[in-house]
Length: 421
Image (cartoon, rainbow, N blue to C red):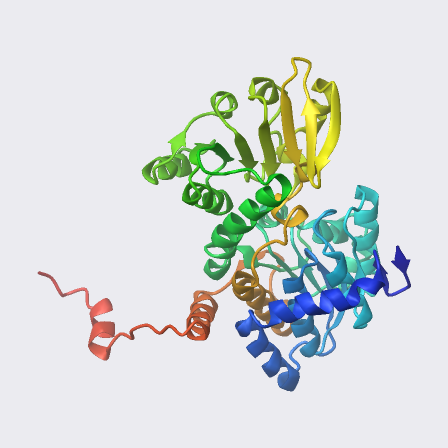
């Protein structure tokens, strides 16, 4: 472990490798690059101190560069014990950024790193899962008065923060980046779908075609997983607790059933619900020999690994990010990435191209908070439709695509309620 006052990383010697990966991401994030070039001139975050708690990936490094280009000081930690890419963390440290993150942290390490990022008394927070924000509202509440506002990247975190807002416990405004259309209809669906299958394949190398693939949930993330599994030839089953997405899954051509029933049919299981105890002991007891179980929701509590530990007679690491549990009857069940985010723990997370829009929303939200946060209420805000549309239009242009524009007559028709048949 390499440690100084400004950084704690696994190995600073990995910086050159990290630089190459960041170069790769930078070339595939044209929207964020355009914002960075403008930021270098305008400096909209001058005087701001941004504490970030977000997966330390090559894409995150490009976001950090952009925030710094806008004039902000930065201190950063990872938002998951297994999601930090150590070479990227080393590159950030070598570039002079304050970063405390490494792959394979304990829970104690995880919160120690968050606490280090808060020591420079941030004016803005950027979160993925709301652990940093909750820390500022709890054990480290002395920092809350100095914070103008924050942003939140993922569904789980937004749910936590909206609950805090309803309870009247939120101490500063937060923008729900996750709920932008250019985030959750793209990053959550296409990013999670592709990267989750990537993580499963890296950890197992199994053939997806012909397998029965059980996806827990049918929100944006789980829908993406189901789509990609189906595209690779799997027979997909959806489990749900909400009748609306369950009905949507049926209309999309998937079988829907309770997990108690699906447990006996599945070859591969992937949870993406944001809820605890989605797969528990009775489900493990019903699974086939050779069943593979993983999670792509933010927290590892979706799979009750304590239940598995209590049921298994032995366990061993069969390959990287893949633990084989042997049951009393001889069945073997494989849990990937210790139940953590399989797409980040066993793979590299979402592709750069889709994170371009998500992180552009993060940057623009920080700029808004720096300008307006002092006059905003302490509630969760959505990103405007105008920002969503502008980012989508810019992304299309970088892909060489263009769209039609309504004529004046068509615009008038939109509001002309007298027009009939």
